[in-house]
Image (tube, rainbow, N blue to C red; front, side):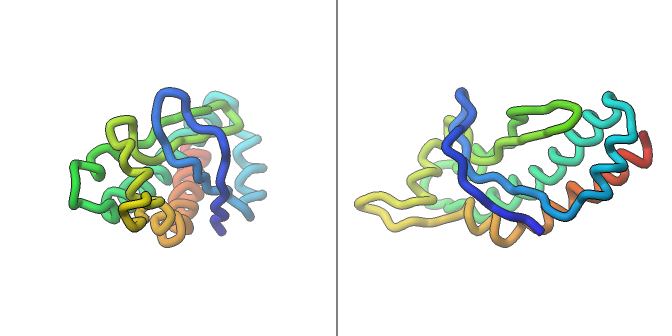
Length: 142
């Protein structure tokens, strides 16, 4: 199950969404990952989380409003913390897509046109499944 939560921190160089997905219920998979060497763990974990981030990038690109500019072209994934035990990717508009925040939340003169939150709500479980499947594959290969 995917849980979405907000964080106050964002990547320093990129304007990113401050929404993250937390994975629950993967304890046995975590135990299997711990049995694999650290090098394999890190590579498998990073590749798995990157694949899950791709699902979210695609969802945001599909849902991004297209009236002004190229917002859908500015949506990226960026690894912000990757270790053998943890992989975190920021997903959302890069600096050039800074106006995505205004699209998502609205302004005084413009109604919100959310595309990030609906992506997490509708594609979050699929991203979790992709991470789980990719991690399982990576551990079995390792």
